[in-house]
Length: 110
Image (cartoon, rainbow, N blue to C red; front, side, top):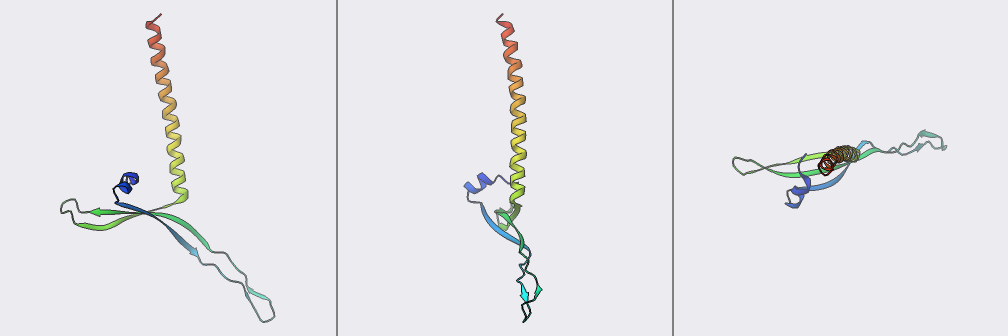
């Protein structure tokens, strides 16, 4: 993953929303007597987050095709949740180390 926040600030990346249609919606079809021949079905689709980032050849500096990454919103939510769990675990570990240090330093003052 690119550093989106910095890339956006430098105007190298642009975020957009796009819809991916898996199956088009189907309208109900009736015969002349009103009997349903084809029942209606809803559209099956999902939205994606697209990040387009400018790319350049590092040797020549010439512009290359933009790099495009797509994420489903669910993927973004999962990444955020996973990172939050890591932050919580590391914070708890840090607090334990700080407690060890504080208790050790308290031994010298007794």
